[in-house]
Image (cartoon, rainbow, N blue to C red):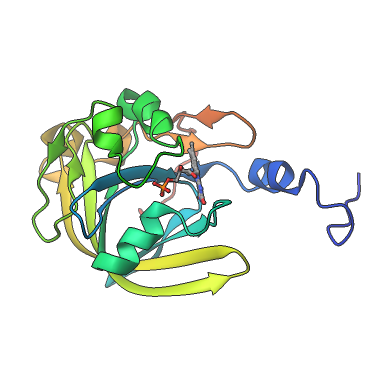
Length: 196
Ligand SMILES: Cc1cc2nc3c(=O)[nH]c(=O)nc-3n(C[C@H](O)[C@H](O)[C@H](O)COP(=O)(O)O)c2cc1C
C-alpha cells in the first residue's frame, strides 16, 4: 500500500498513530489561575534532553481552541507528569473526556491529590512516580501547541526501587497504540551490554 498524504487526509491520524507506537503517556496535572486543577493524558509526549532534563508534549487544538492543559501551563508556568501504570490506566483514560474548565478531573475521576514540592499543580497520589516541571518554551505548529518543560523535581515510590535506585524492571508502564488500543510491558530477552 502506498499513501499520498498530500491527497485525501482522512484516516491519517489513525495511520500515523498506529505506526508511531507505542507512545509513552504523559498524564499531566495543572492548575488554572482560579485554582481549579486539571488532569489529562498526552501521548505526543517524550523526554527530549537529559542533562538538564527537559520533557515535551504536544496538544492539538480542540474544536473550541487551545486545550486546558497547555493553556494552564502557559498561564502558570508549571505542570506535573504523573506515571501511567496498569493500576491507574482506567482512571487515566477517563480523564481524557472533554470537560468544562471549571470541572476538575481529580474530582470527576475520584482521584486523590498529593502536593508537589516545587510547583502548585497537584500530583496524582495513585501514580507511582511524578516529574514536576517548569515551563521552558512553547511553539505553535499548525494547530498544535508544543510545550517544553524543565524537570525540577522527581518523586518515585519505594516499590519502584532496588537498592535505592529506580529499577526499570519494576515499572509496568502503559503505552498508547493506534485506534482504541493500549499496551503494557513485555520485556524482550534482548538486553544491551551498556545500560544507556
Ligand atoms: C491515552 C491518550 C493520549 C492522548 N494524547 C493526546 C495528545 O498527545 N495530544 C492531544 O492533543 N490530545 C491527546 N489526547 C486527548 C486529550 O487527553 C483530550 O483532548 C483531553 O480532553 C484534553 O484535556 P484538557 O483540555 O483538560 O487538556 C489523548 C487521549 C488519550 C486517552
